[in-house]
Structures are given as structure tokens and as C-alpha cells.
Amino acid sequence: MSKPPAPAPPAGGPRRRRRKRAPTAPAPVEVVARAVEAKPLLEGKPIEEPLSAEELAELKLQLRFLREHRRTLQLRVNAHEDLLLNGVREPERRGVVQYLLSKVDRARVFGAAERLEPASATRLVEGVLRISPTLDYLLLYLECVQRSAPGARAISALVGALTRIDFSAVSASQMRRVLELIVELYEPAQLPQVLFGLFENKAFREAFDASAPELPEALARIVVPLRAVELAVLRDQPGRFGAERLAQGVALLLEGDVSLLSRHPAPARQRLFSVALATGQGRRRAARAGLGALLGSLPAPVRGELGLALAREWIAAGEEQAAKALLRELDAAPARRWLEALERPRRGRFALLGSAERPHVPALHLDTLEGAMLHLGSPPPPLVAPGVAPLLGSGVTEQGQPWFAVVRLGQRLSSLVGRRPGVPPSTLLPVCAEAARLLALLAQLGLALPDAQLGRFELDATERLWLTDWTGALGAAPEQAAQAHAELLPGFCQAAFAPGIVPRALLDRLEGAADIRALAAALPYVRGA
Image 1 (cartoon, rainbow, N blue to C red):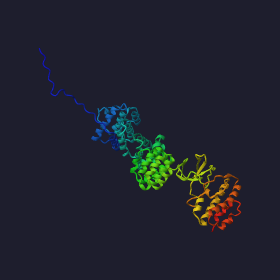
Image 2: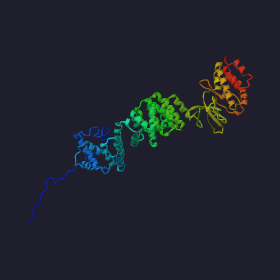
Image 3: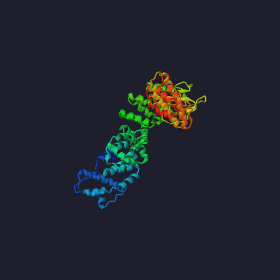
Image 4: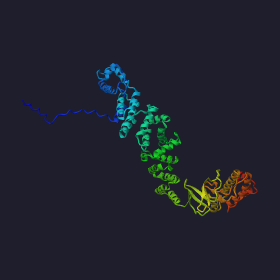
């Protein structure tokens, strides 16, 4: 007997069962937003109050989570609680469910999050955060997201938290965790602007300042300097965290994306530039690009003056090509004078502004861009005293002649006397008196000048006399030096007044004087013509 034919397959081929898709996990930013705004489900209601339909639906989700992770969380439950977890009994009594949910132990959650691989730890803490939306669990969740999904997702979640957290209730340890997340997630170039934005929040500033003394040094080196800059630049309150932290913060800022500072007002950017120069950033190659960009963002009226200050720093740091390029951009009379000086012949770090063959040559000190006077001859002993021009440097010419340089403080007195005939005695009397005081000071220091020629002195814009050349000074007993200098002063005063007339009262004081100290005390009281 033949077998009956096999039934034909249904039209369209065999049917396949469709698998139910697992629910899509919420984005971290959504988890954060829900957690920050949520409160524990059963909090704040009497335990006798019946559960609402919404509460019951949420509790079933939370109990299912606990059932799935009871071993990981090491939950210890009684028989009745076990029935609730397994769905055998419906949650009816609010107090019983509250007690069960309270068995989620903080230490065990943190320990599990540390043991599990990042994605599993993130899912675990997300469930715990749904049961207990506290700041500690929120920060733990952000830390897990940072490990499991670094990049844009983690940053979005962190931003969502930072805009919602009540920083007035944040502890020092929690603040440290917030700062660590910020430092780990953002690129160094972005950090200054992120923190500057957060510092606009008063509660964040106060929480930061309270936690700063307890921060680990590795973290403090990054965030505390930026707070110091924020205070000095955006709030014009320098000094709270010290000069070193301020300098570190300015360096971090300038090595980042300075263009982000454009949203701050011009006075703040100008203060940043000034603080940068004051803290030595102008001489750091790493800060050059940042300073250039910052200078370009400033309004024209201040750009010229600050640009010259920056060029000064670059020249002192040996970055002359960069300084020249900047000076050409400024295209102002002072910038052109500096460019011209940089093309002049050199002696060491001095650009000569006159003939190198002359015994006294005006110059520009390239380390400070201060005026200097270079003298041919052996350098005198260093002398630090009021009215004595500082010694800037010394060296040997290509011909083997020694030279030294002092600060240029005005014009040489010998040149001024020749150009200003008929100067009234009332102007020259203080000059003679000041010369007497300078000679008395040298004598007290045990130094005797061989002469008091006008070429040794300069007169600054305030008519103050300066000794700029003390070559040939020899050591001597103070009494001997005082007597020798008393003999030099009449010649100095006679030359200073020429071609005018030396006042009779002055001549009476000078004649027969045996001690320069007595003259120095008497001359300020001379009056007349």
C-alpha cells in the first residue's frame, strides 16, 4: 500500500517565529536627567497608604532588577521578600517594599561596579540609580559611563549632570569626583573654558573653594590654577591662590584653545594678557601661539602698547624673528624704532645705536629693551647705591678691548651743558648738591674717583643726577676719599655752570673745603644767583 503524500507546505514557505526585541537601553543623558530630577519612589508617604498603579508598575521593574542582580548585590532576603522578588506575590504593603529596597548596600554596589566589566557595571548602577537616585550613585554611574562609552556620550551625560546638580549640597569628596570626571573626559585644551563656565555658578565656586585644600596634588595642579586665573582675569581678584598657581593657570590657558576666550569681554582678555606677561609667559615658546592669538583679539587702541610689551619679552627670550614679525604687524613709530635697533651691530646682548669706535656708545639692552651706555675700558667693581646706575654687563670687543654697560637713565651731563648755555643757576645748584652727595656716598663706601668730569654723570628727565661711569675708582679709607672728593667738587661745579657764572655763595662754600661730607650737607641750603 502506498504512503499518502506528504502535506504541502503552506503558501509562502515555512513561517518563522519573530523574536521579541530587547528594549533599547536609554541613553546616558536620559538616565542622568531622570535621576537628578527623581526622588526615591516610596519616599515621603505614610507606610499605610496604598500603592498607586504608577508606583506598582515602577516597583515591579525595580524588583525584577533586584531579582536579576541579587547575587551581584549579595542581597539577603527572607521568605516573604523572596516571593516578592520572584513575582509570586504582588507588592502590596509599602513598608515591606521599602525595607526590601533599603537592603541595597552602598559598599556592595561600589565593589560590584569596580569588579564588573564597564558595560555590565554601567547597567548595574543604572538600575541602582533608579531605586536610589542619590548624588553618590549618580557620580558612580557617570564614572561607569566614562569607562564603558568614553567620548561624546559620556560628555553629554556629564554636561546633563553638571547643569542640574545642586552644588550647595555637594561634599568635598563628591566635588573631587566631579572634578576628576571633568579632567578625564575633556581634552586639556577644552578644560579652561569648561571650568570657567562652571565657575559662573556661585554654588559651584563655593563648593570648589571648600574642597580645594583637600584635593590630591595631581588634580589640584590642573584645576586650582584655573580657578586662580578665573579670579584674576574674569573677576579682577588676583592673589587668593598665590603667584605660582596663577602662573600655572595662565600657562594651561595659553596652551589650550585661546579662541574660546572671545566670548569674554575685552577688559578680561586684556587682563589675561597683562597677567601672562607679568607671570613670565611671554618668554615661554609653548605660550607664543596663544599670546599671539590673544593679542589679535584685543581692540586696536591697546593692541599697540601690549604688542610692544610682548615683542620685548620675545626679544629677551632670544626669539628675535618672531619679535620682528610682530613689530612689522604693529607698524607704529615705536615698533619701527625697535626694528631699526634690532638691525644694528651688536656687542653681546646690546644693539649699538652709535659708532662702535667711540669710547662711549649709546645702546639698547636686548634682554630688557632698556637704554644703555657702553664704555670702553675695564669694568668697574659692581656698585649698588642710590644715584649709581646699575651695571648691566661686560665683555670684550673683537679687537680684544674690554667694555662694560650701564643703564642709560638720561643724557650725559657734558652734552647737556654744551647744548644749554645760559641755564639759570637755580637749575644747576641742585646738580652740584647732588654731585656732592654722590661723592660723599662713594667716600663712605671707601671708593675714591680719580676725577669728577661731567662725562661720568647723566641727568634724567626729572633733573636728577646719576653716576654712570665709575671706572678708575680705587679703594681708600673713607676720610682720605672724603678729602679727595672735596677737592674734585669745585671743578665739577665750575664745568657744570660754564659758560654761566658760578654764584658767589657757592664759591664761598667750595673754597677751602676739606671734607666732601660737609659740602654735601651744606649745599642743599645754598640759594641765589
